[in-house]
Length: 312
Image 1 (cartoon, helix red, strand yellow):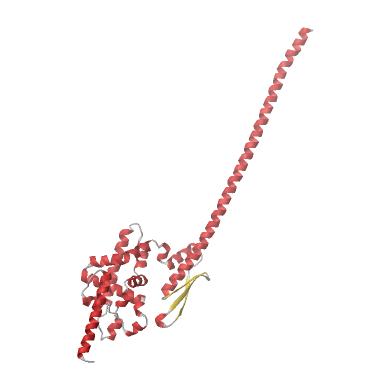
Image 2: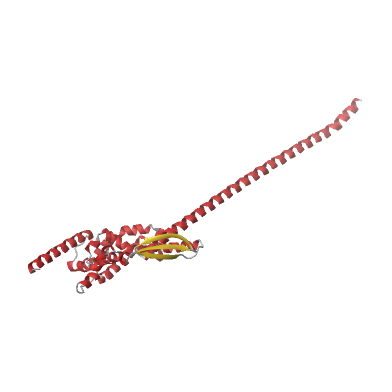
């Protein structure tokens, strides 16, 4: 290849890189220093294949801290009554590899990452771990280039919808913990997870079964063991919760029927007591009347006798 042709190819590659960076910066809402953005997008696989270039790992470390700070501050201020444990669950629902990867997919971040040939060939552009790490590196780059206010604004724009959604998840904040709490309440024992995996190393699928007391209550699948176990825990939680709710519903209906029968029995007893009282009162009244008649007759009898004697 001639030097002139090499120069043309290099210029074309540089133009394409600049164009893609402009597109990403438009989605982020910030224009960053070019070298900083390039480093944020450089995965270690690319760096190692190209002579040991700087990777995005230090920026990822920084961005992770910035993200955690902004999310934690937001949760602390918007949920003043929640205890520390619940706040920690909310933060974990937002700041985790799967959630970050979904945000990264929304930005189509995978198309901008500089990957080595090995990662490129095994679907690295859509791997949750790579997307999550790169997004954190980008946040770190925004912090270095624009400051904490700008980085915080970016985090709010990207993650506030997820924070709001997580606040309404309830048991869904951590299905494994919620399942363990539910099985303890129901006296069922401690859940265990049986996990199997299929597929090649770069594209494994994990299947988990959630068992409690030797009984399987739910299964789940995912690209990681953790994801499969969370799905299995969710399925088991819903099954056990539904059965518990049904039992509570039946018990409530039985209690309501028993209460109704008791009220009806009390009403019958009260009616019978009232009738007996009325009957007794009537008998007393009749006896009193009879006594009054007898008394009148007793008074009239001497008068009649005296009258008869006078006439004689």
